[in-house]
Image (tube, rainbow, N blue to C red; front, side, top):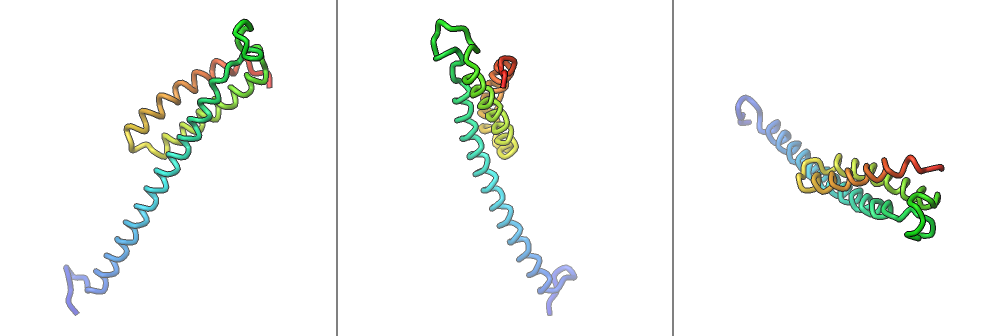
Length: 123
């Protein structure tokens, strides 16, 4: 039995097999993280778009903003979910500078929308 740096061939082979398994598992977790980041970002984008619903009564521009409690509830809930989903997207895709920049833009906009709509929520 030959040795490599004091280790037998059997130990070296087992170590290499374990390293291959760990590398494969790492690759699978990276793909899963990217897939979850894309999924949460996509759903967050839909929630962000839903939070932009006009909040005046019957969408009548003559009515003051925040006069329809149902639309205020929809805008508040959607912007809150959008903030949560974009934070999750940042956690999943924190290594991608492009994804972080894209998510931060929407996150800031949704936080602003949430902060401006919450005082009018009577839920």
